[in-house]
Length: 220
Image (cartoon, rainbow, N blue to C red; front, top):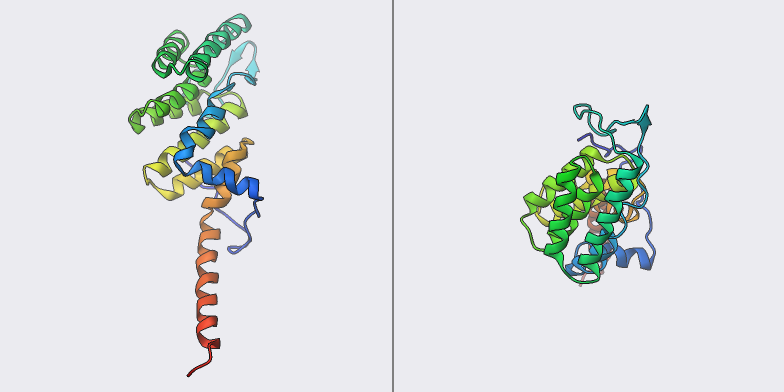
């Protein structure tokens, strides 16, 4: 995955989040994640599916080795309806396993429908599934995604999962950077929090302030 860690100034100040933004970022990395963020994230990822089309074929924009596939308008409407039912099973009825089963059937019927992978990854997280299964679905969502919303959510979820696993921090940052590039608000905030340059500069400033306080303290 290409790195987006370049910066014109190594110590450029990160975005200054508002109190609301700070609260949202805190939700990302606490136990509240599986309540507030997941409940928001799982809903409606199908709603802005805008594929890049060429003579009726949909060509995945995120992988050169995936063959073009076709999703007709009528099939897309049907998939979205089935996906809504799966989401409602999780959100309204609390039937996470039922939602997983329904989403799995959607994926079986249309293996290149990215949004179903994205939502199944959410449901698997809520069900406490092995992170490797979640990441496999997110990689499939990224592989097949044709709209920025689904792609951004998949990258954002992936960053959160890898961070929770205490995985490679560069990969975490890159996932959030990709999510932010797709317009995902949560990824934008998380990216600012995880920016390695900001972390490095923060440590430098903290150490400089500590030394300044030490040297300026009156000696007895």
